[in-house]
Amino acid sequence: MAKRRTKNRTHVPVENDKNTNIPKSICIRLGSLAMKNKSLKQLTHDFRLILSPHTAIRLKELNKNKLKDFIVMCSPLNVTHLFTFTQSDNNENDIYLKLGKLHNGPTITFKVNEYSLIKDVNRFKHKSINTHSLIFQEPPLLVINGFKNDIPQEKIIISLFQNIYPPINPMQKKIEDIKRVLLVNKLEDGTVEVRHYMIVIKDLINKEDIKAKNIDKLLKLKKDDRRTIPNLKKKKDISSLVLEDLGYMTSDNESDIEEEQIIKQEEEIKQELEAEIEVKQDEDDEEASFKKQKLNDGSFKKQSNSNKKAIKLQEIGPRLSLSLLKIESDLFKGETLFHSYIKKSSKEIQELQKKHDEKVKLKEQRKKEQEANLLRKKEAKEDKKRRKDERRQLKKEQQQQQEENDDANSEDKGKSVSEDESSSEEEYADIPEDIDSDLLSEIDENPSDDE
Image (cartoon, rainbow, N blue to C red; front, side, top):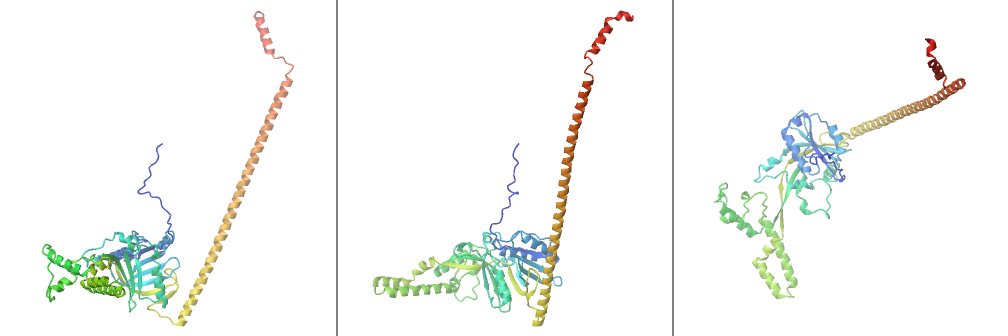
């Protein structure tokens, strides 16, 4: 018989996740209004790109799905963080973002003041970012600014955001693998801004190279019908146009260094060379004079700038402006640790704490009762099973005994039959065996007498 074919493309065996220590996250929408909002759907998808690669990018929510369904699903998938976008029923413009740490909290609730999608950010660029690029295969570098560890609520926010991504080991992590940056910045008014950037690394461009590059671009404008000659009304001289960076004629991927930065680097290099010349001035006058001549000619600029790199952050999106609303002790429930709108006195806080302790005590009592009931039902079930097994064993023994009795009766019956046969043989032992044959022979010998 031929071996059955296995489908390798669709029937891939499920492998156990070895990296269980890596934080994983899920971003979803909840509520009927949120499921109908297409803009919020795109924001959820864009926010998943921020959390990539350790997140469910292709997860699809349904209207019948509840929060409990996702919480139950997070346990076997080793998910550590859950993000939810909800929309208020009273005001459709109110959108909330909740960040919960599985499985025991805490939970932070933010109000989304403003947001911009990836397509909105790319609309103001000359070249858009491919969302399916290789830059999303590695987690971004997290930068947190403006928060203080002295404030309890800000300390909770810092700890939650830091645990979203796996920690970076500087000894093993390669700099080339870091392609993105996530900035979480707190402003003076308490607003939290979330920005997502891509890291662009270019070689340092010399000041003379910038001039030559700008002149070449001005000459190429004649052949390019899509671009026009820049407006010179605000320029006093053509040199101001050539010396400045023509940002409107360059794409966002071309990162030119500003003139002030180049001058600053040149001054640092000059100071280093001057210090080196002063040290070796007494030892070798010819070498010192040669270095002074190079310093005055500026021939060191190309050598110094050739090995330097320029780093630029290019925004990818989405862009979020958040306001902290409240912090809860448990996962999407529990005691309110902080609330931005509602302020409680010390007496009210004590009363709430007392009620919370009573609820926790009642919950523990019910849990113990439930465990006792389960144990009692389990013991009753085991007792019933034991009695059933005993009845089965007893019935089996009775059947075996019955079979043995039947076998014994059959043997006794066989013996009685054999004894009856032997007794009958003894009774007819005197009768000759050929008595019938003798009678028949006598009849055959005298047939004429009968006639």
